[in-house]
Figure 1 (cartoon, helix red, strand yellow):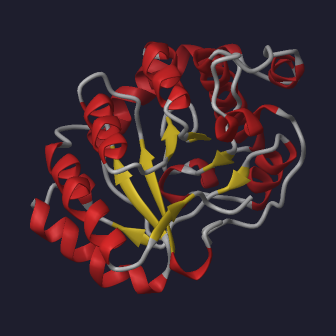
Figure 2 (cartoon, helix red, strand yellow):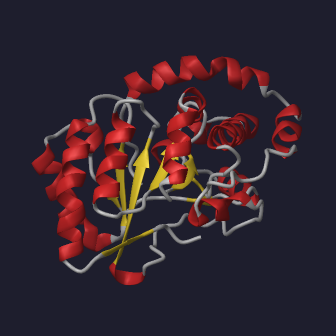
Length: 256
């Protein structure tokens, strides 16, 4: 999987997350995450609540859809964002589509109301690390653990007790260790087949064309709801979602 850009935004998030990462040194990070994080909110939907049980899952990187060969997985990365996440949620609701939101820990911590809205709408949560460091695979195992486990805690607390069901490494920077650790926490490593390139803001028409061209190669599509102006993403989703349904696709979640 190719690594996507966003270095400027990444540096801002790294700075915001520095204090969190430093606090999670050594064995303390394991004990902090091993403690009870609370049970799922009674208002959580069935699909989200299934992620609450801490049960190991397969550590291979997931790409397939639970809807089979004509399934499509919509995945939304880097949020939540107070400007763009509500707009993405509105479009998904308009077309009756459920998605997987891969959230950055510091963003979830800053906007717990949006995390709860995502869960209440029946979408699934995904751990996208604390600070979106696309060089995680070059760092120590202790650092990888801090990034994954602190983000899991932040997202779970922000959601009201619903745990992430997946882990997506920033830029696809997985390692055997990070995949094993995430899977041991009940988070299936999550890849993608179609990079919409929306992060580069190439224009709505280009985003739509990229998705339609690359979708035959696999069902999991990568979009973003943070890291800059995502108006092209919102409009692209507005065009893509009904179009793919008309073509006989159904929307689902990545396999677990």
